[in-house]
Image (cartoon, rainbow, N blue to C red; front, top):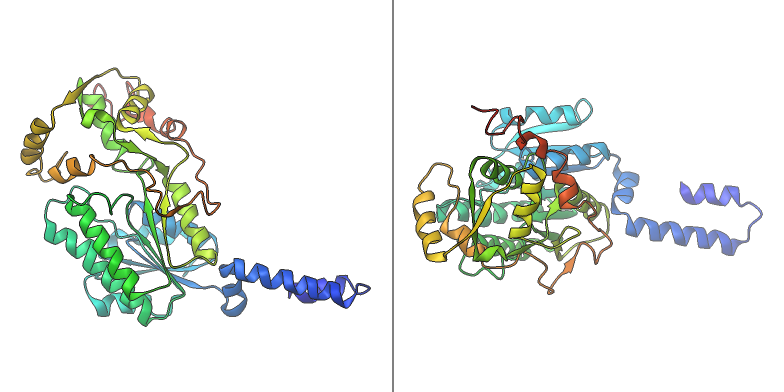
Length: 357
């Protein structure tokens, strides 16, 4: 269509100019995978596993706004009904899906042009068998289903540093899941983000709650572990652009605009909630002993596996391309973004110590 309109507008142009327009249009189609799908098939379909989770619901919302039909594959559809309000009537379909069943996963991917795996599990999971089922087995079933359903692209969300933390059960499971995916489906983009944060995360919000309640906060490994926090909206934009562009068969490390040590993150959070706390260096032997007991709780504040992860910097390895290398720069800065919701932990705020008395 673009080609014909271009020719009509340039009736007096030479044939050579017409060929030039067509060449430019063909180049645009190769670069913009989403546009080519629209021209060929109309509204494309994407299946999002874990679509009701922290990252998943942002992905569902953005995909719907771009005109995609979205199939949200979740364990409990009743917990995902709210996602239907993110799109037009009939645009978002909620499916009951068991990611540990090949037939169930295959049913969710049939007819889709793209699949996004946002199944995250729990970083604080202490049961290695559960971690394996989520990070290894589910990834295996989803990638096999993507191959059998002949989808155009699979985007799998992993984690930064999984190849380095060889003494972490979480990292080992994540790395094995990646290997399974690569073996099963070549048209895969694996995203390895650093810490993803937002107003509804389990990272900054939990830390601000602890900092608002306790007079002392422990630092492990002297608080020197480095991170490159990326805001969830920036991370979702990366996912969308990768889906829409001719990018596949890659591992991409996803980072924010700055590198911060854990101590720097804590200090920024304290400033943001107007609190002063003593930051103490926790000897690792005492930390491990504490973690041994804390991980027995239903919702552990710390696990031994987390301590193992904290030994390694959560920044680009240099072995793979980053989102910046692909022109997908994340621009939202940590301090600026947390200031937009940290008021809830300030004096008189919803989660402040005084408010809850």
